[in-house]
Amino acid sequence: MREGFCALFKKDCRMLASGKFFLMAAGFLALYTAYVNLGYIRFMQMPPYNVYLYDPAGTQTEVSSLVHAVASLEAMDAALLSDANGVGLDASAEAVRVVLYAGAEHVDHHRADYALSLLRPSAGSAPEIIGTNTPEQKARKEITCELLFFELAAVGFLGIAAVLFQEKGMGVIRVHAILPLQKNLFLLSKLMVFLLSDLAFAVLLTLLNVGLADGAALLPAVLLQTAILSLMMALAGLLCALLLKDFRQFTLAYLIIAIFAATPVFLSANTSVKFDWIDYHPFYHVYMGLKNAYFGVAASLVYYIGSACAIALLFLAVQLAFRREMGKEG
Amino acid sequence: MIEVKNLTFSYGKDKQALHGLDFTVEDGEIFGFLGPNGSGKSTTQKILTGILKGHGGKVSLFGQDISAAYGPEFFRKIGVLFEFPYLYANLSAVDNLNYFASFYPKAQRRDVGELLETLEFKPDFLKKPVSSYSKGMRQRVSMARALVSNPRLLFLDEPTSGLDPSGAVLFRRIIEQERRKGTTVFVTTHNMMDADLLCDRVAFISNGKLVALDTPKGLKEKNSNHRVVIDYLYQRQRQTKTIEAPELEAGIPFAHDEVISIHSQEPTLEDVFIQYTGRGLS
Image (cartoon, rainbow over all chains, first blue to last red; front, side, top):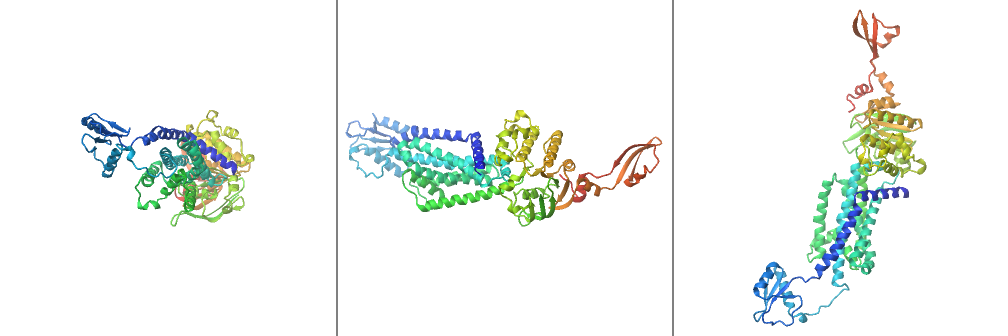
């Protein structure tokens, strides 16, 4: 049995290597890391809006260094024309006048309040800070979590389905039906390859983007959540590839998962938008499990029991579909 | 080796594929299973190879009921050549065979290189991916895969499909060699020449029922009209006459100057099949 599993495992690795899967994963890792370190973190550290001040008499004495001084009202208009999110402050009269292109009402209030607060930086109240993460650490953990979720849910799902579609097309699944091996090993070796690949990806992505010390401390919890999501997505990918006729049908199924399943989860987990029904969405809990792992919050026992049951049910469904595929006509 | 009694199988409520088949295959026999598309021969082979479960009746292989024999031990004893050459297209012939052989105990495996040489596989292609092979080369690798485990029972589905005439002769010779080693061979085919030349006995299946079972010679004799056609010259004129074969025992029973040819009217296996089933094999 051990020798059979090793042969299957080696063959699956070769299939993935010949399909450039590992190369693609390495490429994604490099791309995500460049995006986080060269783009996202810098972007998150930038002020939310540019503020332009016209103060010919120099009445504002305590102005923040984030404010850009302009020489005339015409110059301020020109700046706002090219930067529609910017906020203009006209301090030529006694009361400071706020000038901006209208957006959404609540955002406009925020923009105005933010711009005015930069004229009196010392007058701001000091809020109580809870949690130990710096804004950069928080941003790094959030984006790493999102990218890992995307990688596991989309790329891993597509990858395992692509391998199985290839084997289905070559008809070799039927040959395994008459080989002296436990048929489940065929599925288990694929799950193992993807699980190990996903775990390695999670380790590298976390260490490269969260930082070595912080990342290493988070890894046990992150890897546990990665394993749960990786198994679920790999099993879902196997099931779709076994049940669906061709890659075109599979692409449709993938779009449905990507758009209708993942979008509300990201919205509910990362913004103030929260749908009433989101608690019934299984992806939401898996995503929150991963996010909580990055922020050191333990998941509940119910979540783990639910995940184990979901994995077991998916495996049973995959087994049935696999046996059906083995018995198909040539 | 194989004992089938009242075998039935149904793909759902109203789709009965097999209606009570009865046959046995002896140790070391080459047994042909012939039938048109949709007649139930693939279903029968799938039940015998342990792929399809849920049949009715009794099926024994190696003296053991098949429902108790679906484990790895059973699959170690059989080799299957499918109708299509199912191989990993991105791997070479050698890699494919080493991969499939790795599921069998080392002592049972045949040498992959020797096997491919026996099958006259082109040495230049040994390390090239299967995707670059012709149909005949893929069929050779598939045959090697079926033989690599030294099976005691060999299931061959259309073994000479995709081969040129010399390849077909080679395959028939290899199947004969296997039989001489004591291997039992169960051949499913449309090819009447294969069935006639190879098989000790053949069974005809039509609409899920066994309609005839005998040696190819026996079937042809049973269904022969025992007539001969004689071409001859008489008074410088070429003539043809059909007579009953026993009439020949006392010599040519009519006046003639010279006999040009005598042809028996023995039917071909395909003629016999059509007689039994009312339709051809394709």
